[in-house]
Amino acid sequence: MDSDAGPRIAGAVVVYRLYDVGYEIDLERALDLLASTPHERATLRRTLQYRPDGSEEPDESDHAVARRSARAEVQAIQIKTPPITSTLAADTITLGDRQHDVHVSARIFDFGVVSMRLYIEAPGLLNWREYSAFGNAADAAPGLAALFHRHLHQLTARLATTIARPHIAPVTEDYIVYRITRLLGSTGEALPTVVLRDLDVVPLLLNEQRPLADTARAELLPYWFSYYPDDLAILTWSSALIVDPTEGDSDVQLILEFANAQLLELRYYDALLDAELPRMYDRIAERRSRALFGRRYAALLTGLQTLVADSTEIVERAENALKVTDDVYLARVYAAALELFRGRVWRRGIDHKLAIIRQTYAMLNAEAMAVRNEVLEVAIIVLIVVEIVIAVVLGRR
Image: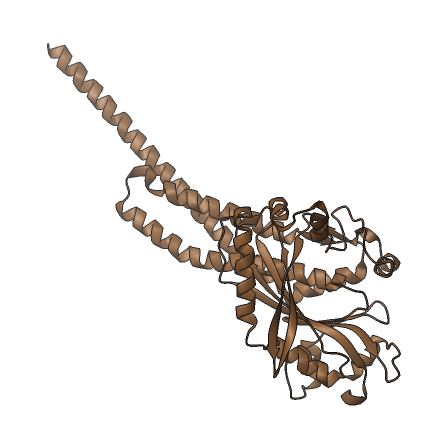
């Protein structure tokens, strides 16, 4: 199908950049700072489609509820500690030779991650080629980094008292969602998403302008999901095309955002452990050369124990933050995202490094205990000798 004769598209681009800003965030205190009234507090929580107990939020559209209820049980998404979402400000960005309005928001997770989001609406109805060009321009916009950093620093300054061990990590996670809300034919009729299978999505999702071989296309774009004729999700490592007629974030967007937050924590702690291992060996060598007796490793052992505990706790909290249970469609999307992001590979790497640290801890602790036992044995022998000497001296008197 020729792209100019194809469907007319209404939609937007949502650019995500996720940051680790600290060990954890107190969401209740963050709500106090971000909301001045009970209604605003409810609004910050209401951005999620599901509560922790599985019930819907009260202000969802009947259409959105009906779509999910027809597909599966409403408790399909279970969120242990729901994040809060705050609308930050309106801004502008230049795409090509045109200024576009940007709606900036942030989703704040209790395990220390802030997901910054830029929502850029497409300028009117576009054909597929125009929408692809718009999406590519948004992805490569030169002002994105500065815009993200400006709003992130404003938000973290506002939330400073709610963040434990505040520190913006150098590791970030980027993702972009091309969101289509309407596919229209030449006479304005709604079209099913199957029409997109006749179009070339490679330039948009992979930013490749040359045609790909069939084998490369199949390998790079294996994940296509649809449940209804009017919805579609195509996932890649760094982007997704989501067609959904409901307003606001779709369920798939929510799942992808959680998956990216989990990936960020895995990458952050993997990098932290990578940097810690050589430093650990250096400190062991230093303490062996200059420290005395069994206390030579006391501070090091405490530090290693803290590192293992912190890494294990936060990674598990991030991985268990969201569960998809009864909805087979969303479960497949979530599993595909985790596979694309290689979550299990990252987790195995972290577990392997933590195992090395635990083994080192056990070895050093055993060595320290052995030294202390040797010192104790020497002390006992010295006391016995002193006692014998005293007895001999007193006997001669």
